[in-house]
Length: 465
Ligand code: UD1
Ligand code: CA
Image 1 (cartoon, protein in one colour):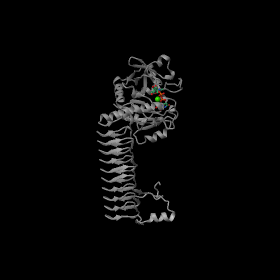
Image 2 (spheres, helix red, strand yellow):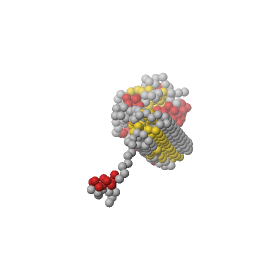
Image 3 (cartoon, helix red, strand yellow):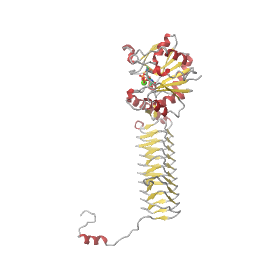
Image 4 (cartoon, helix red, strand yellow):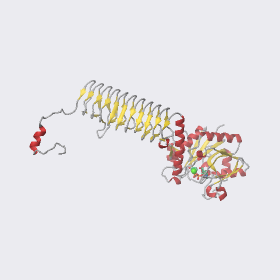
């Protein structure tokens, strides 16, 4: 047996007060709709149909590379009207799993269990419900035993109905034919003037069809996101889940509450994450690393036994046994090979630093290919930009670049060559050569005394008298 999922994601999202469509707001680095798609897919949905409307183009663009189909709801007339737009798309299906795009916390396990329950009971519809402390804003479940007789929206509910603390999650299983039949009878005679999907429950009951409740144990799973404070709540719940999973896999967090770890992040065992570490996007960190905050690592791959102290790292690769920081800035395209060391106040961009090479202090390395065993002295600048174009610099294995040198690209520094401190290198340096590119020093004995006599004799040479 199989099923298709229909995700309703066309709504206004008025309460978010945002220029971005609601379902694109991110929870732990992934748009809400992305979490719902992932849960439905992992639960076994063979097709996923997303109903889009508000910001349709933007939503489609965000998921164009996922294997999902889109249906347009041109006008937002309610959740029942939204599902109706998918009628043609799902013609050949028997079972539909219908979800809303604004509930990122539902798990694939709960979805799967609900579908199985729906099949076993043979019901026309199954509603996922939860018992919550504060049901405000949700549709209330009117029950009789395990039957759901109706769902009453908050705005249309009586005082007694409002006191019910079992809520409609917005997740349903339907026999396809029966739900679309029932939808024909849904009208918009309610406080919001919308065609409610929730009304099919009462309609099916009137047709003597079975509608059952499937209650989830953890009400957190069905937390909907309608405004920014619910978004923050969803973020907090999901963050806790992610960090708990990583801790269960053998990662130490010294103070998890202060860290931010996106859903796609992977971390190997025995890595220690200090307070104030932000790991974002597709970041992968190996085993036995130490990451000291405040650090932000985005879309980067870090090997094993790497030590990172107070750094910003983006779209970069760092191999095993590397030490970075404090205060290094690795911009996109940095590739740091095994055993290298990147020290304080070093900025690296679109460059490779070879095995065991050192860039320990105060350097800018831009558009460079640095070989292995290279020593870059303090304050060396790779001058990669001539005001029009960027150029590359090559530093071959074993070269020694003296402090405060400028390497004016394009330029090649040969293997085992030696650049004297303070040089401004504009020409290639051959293998094993010494390059000195600075004015020769000249000392003038007795010059200071002579100057004092000439200028009137009271200069202190800068010292306080
Ligand atoms: C809805 C349910 C409510 C449930 C709650 C769970 C209805 C009538 N009410 O209320 O019983 O407790 O979710 O979170 O279904 N949408 C469209 N097209 C539309 C309107 C909405 O695609 O014309 C989409 C929205 O993008 C959203 C979802 O449907 O993802 C739910 O809409 P929303 O307005 O958030 O419904 P709630 O008031 O939260
Ligand atoms: Ca909602």
